[in-house]
Each structure stands twice: as C-alpha cells, then as structure tokens.
Image 1 (cartoon, one colour):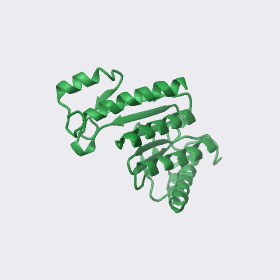
Image 2 (cartoon, helix red, strand yellow):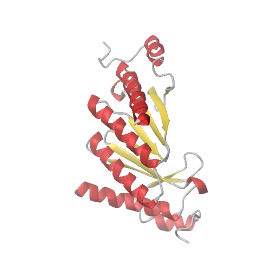
Image 3 (spheres, each protein chain N blue to C red):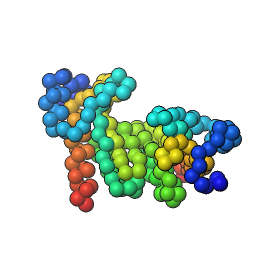
Image 4 (cartoon, each protein chain N blue to C red):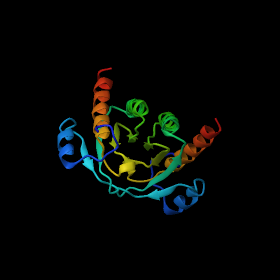
Length: 106
Length: 106
C-alpha cells in the first residue's frame, strides 16, 4: 500500500511528517504539497543541488517543483494525479534531506 | 545608463517589452518581474534548460529565479536591490529566449 498512488490519511500525515520535521505542508492550488527551502552560499552551489534533486527525481520517476535562486533551492513534492500527497512524497522529501546532508559534506 | 542599476521608466518598459513579446510582467512581492514559462517534453530536458539559464546568469553575474518542473521551466528576471526592473533584466530575458531557441535546435 505504501507505494500505491493513494492519498495519505491525516493520521499517516502526522506519522510521516515526524521523519521530515523541517518541511512544511502548503496548499497553493488546492493540492497539499511538502515544501522546504535549502540555503546555499551562492547561485552555482544552489544550481548544483538542483541537479542532485533532479537525479533523485529521475531515479524514482517522480518529479518535484524546484525553485532555484541565488543562495536557495525550494523543493516541493506532491502528486498531481491524486491532487495531494502520497506516501512516496514523504519518502522523496526525506531523500532530499539526505541528499542535502551528503551535498553539504561533499 | 543602460547598464547602471536604475529602475526603468514606464516609457522604457513599453519600448523594451517589444523585444520580448511573450514575457509577462508580474508583481508578486511588490517588485515587478519579467516572467515566462518554457515548455519541454520531459523533466530531464527541462532541467537541462535550467542549467543553460544558469550559465547565462553566471556569465552576467545576474541571477533569476528558475522554477523547474516536469515539462516546464519558469524563469523570472528582476533586480531585488532596486525593487523592480532594470534594463539588464530585459536583456537577460531576451538572452533566455535566444538560449531556448538554440536549445530547441540543438
């Protein structure tokens, strides 16, 4: 069930959200999204991280919105086909956090 | 004057805008921005174009916001330090259009 395209319940949101405490849930177009903005020292570093997130997305075949600016990368995960969040979105958010940690240490 | 950091006048906006007819002027945070959304066949191609825009930005030392999604790249040019648009923003928008044309032909 975790990998089926099924909207998470409120109880699941509460549980899964514990794994990604810094992310916030927004609902910009009536669809819940997980969003977080990572900070970087300049534009080139931000763009390099954008590409890392792109690799994660392509590997899973699930794609976020990525807002690249000087010194920051905003990432939003959600599933448009179900109009909200599935378990995979939380997994991808956690993987993005892991990628950021590895990126900072590299 | 064209390259000094000076806000464009309404007359200049009207003139410069003719060179980038597809772009729209938005004012999301009280600061006018030039915005356009380019379409692509998939995520990887969109991300490749994001990197092209990044090259343009780094070459000029002027950086946009780039929203990368599956099949699209939204680009916004403006100058935060003056709270709006300078001539360079219009030039960068035109260069982005040229980069898109070259990218499509490559």
